[in-house]
Image (cartoon, rainbow, N blue to C red; front, side, top):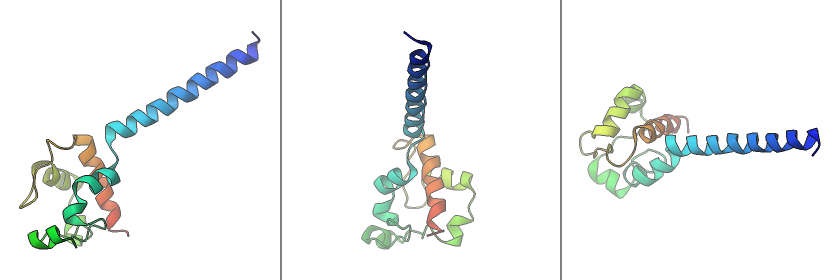
Length: 112
């Protein structure tokens, strides 16, 4: 075996390890958009407007609004984790990292 093939093999191992770390990290931290779609959009709508039958019935807040967007991340995390008003708690449905990712995604809704 030549020196070059050993370098190529180790390079391939390194690339595979990096890919596995990235995939594992994204699963550990969750995908805010996917978790939002699965857990929040039925009431808050895909765009965060709350313009859904359930959202209208419960008079949910528009997540794009200044009222919501001015909340700190900690406040939004607490509301999502423990529930607020008619919104249920998600502490048993989403991990802390998934909730953080959902809050980060909610921040992007104001920009759309």
